[in-house]
Image 1 (tube, helix red, strand yellow):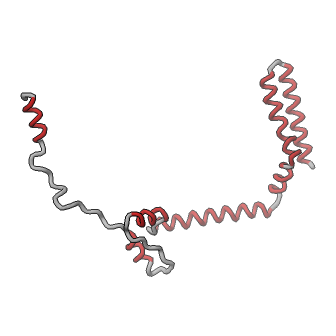
Image 2 (spheres, one colour):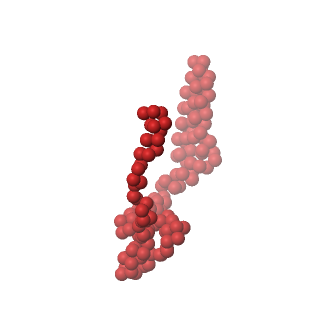
Image 3 (spheres, rainbow, N blue to C red):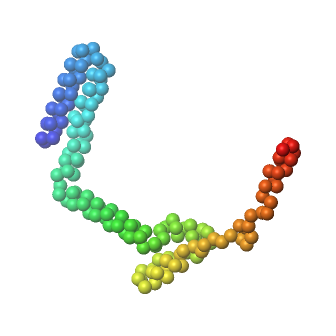
Length: 151
């Protein structure tokens, strides 16, 4: 009831300001002010204000927000601990499964956790034998171009 009265007063004041602005021949600004002034009374008439006040002033609603915040914090702590221990996340497990490496699901028991971590690490890629050896005459192309131009 009190919120309806306050919203009506705010709308009336806004419409008064819009009327004064229109009197000064600033019709575009007056139109915008009138549009903003009608929002509070429109919210009261649709029942949104009563809904908002019932949410804001109920302690159980705030307790619910607190529980949701606690849940988010616990989820973030769990993800942080998972990253620090080196347990692969969902993306890493999918990438390992897609590349042909054996995907090992993390187990719940603590002693076998270390073996699961070692099994999920991908083997190091090694170069083919002789691939890192540079050719003996790596400037032969450059020499051929210089000879062609007479240098």
